[in-house]
Length: 525
Image 1 (cartoon, rainbow, N blue to C red):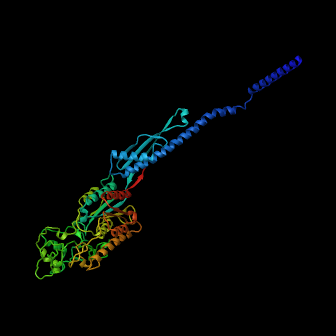
Image 2 (image 1 turned 120 degrees about the vertical axis):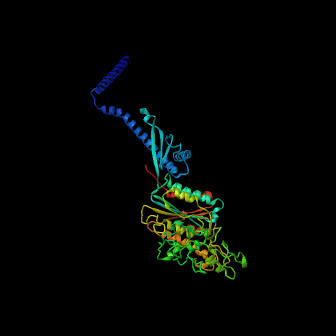
Image 3 (image 1 turned 30 degrees about the horizontal axis):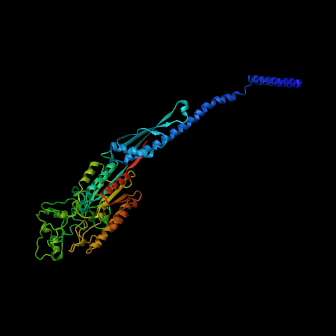
């Protein structure tokens, strides 16, 4: 047995020695083996490779934050650009609210202070954000700073705008005229921005009632009928001395002269922009003169609303002859509107690039007279067109300019219906009896014709230049007649350019909406 133990021990010792010799040979072989260099190099390269990958991840996160910052700044700057009624702290608050809405706190990165400056119509904004690093902190960078800037410039290139605004008597109630002035001022402010004058922006104003005032300075312009050449000149003063020149009628009065109002040209010239020609009398405009109507009150059931002089002579003269007699105006004083009845509006303001000229004209608007929508619209067209009578408008083929007409009314067309020989109130079309609205007897038929001509003049305007049509906006203001709303909707260039304004506040919003549509904002950097 002892022998067996000796043999086992000797075998174990031999195995150990063998293992030792083998291990020694393996270890010694490493001294001369070069194949492990690749592993060593890879091990050393892992550190910068991991670091580079981490930098890429962190930089992509920073780039994402920069994009979101830019988007939020653009939204805020555009909002500031349209808010022309705000300044200072109000603009700062508006910018911050839009920025926060487009860069909420839950987004990647912590946004810092927002800066805003507005100089000469250029809105500049900047913001920064801090981004916590995911991998670069290994190299000692715990966060990255990211910044973004933007600029928005109000750009108004070649814009001509004419506001055709209802100045009738009904506008004098419920603060409507004041609301209209405020809304129109807002539009002017938005379009002009910081400018007080512009070479690329022109605005005109056409206040209208039963007729339109073109301005007394145009009496000798060549397009006012001073020589009684029109077929409708003086037709209501056709007794005694025959048809009288209206300017001679004014000369007879002691204290009244032509105030600049004109009557409609014969149809269809009344709803066209045909250039006036002194050799063609019907293309000229006759000065407005509302006749003194008979002194009968309700005598025999007749009623004449425009009575401002004593009839001479009386006696057996018919009511028609009393009204048509030009002799009764000689050396008389008139202590009412008299011949200006139903057209005491302020004059047209031609297209101008001077802001104060427009705002002054808006401030001077007054409420008087009844409603004649096609009359006002036709003159809006004539103001914006390049041809006479008003020539401030750019050529239709001038690619630089876009022409726009904004029409507002607070009521339906009105001519009145009276049980007398005139059949109506005097307006830019004279009386119903004169036949200038397609009938000599029916005021309702004449009114229907007036509505038809409203639609026709709108279509004429929109068809004037097919290559670049005049844009037409229409607004109804505290008006509840669905028929005239439909006419106004059809008058607009498209249904989206028709605005109903049931209140003063909505009117203001609608004018601002139109102004903002006309103000093209662009991101310049």
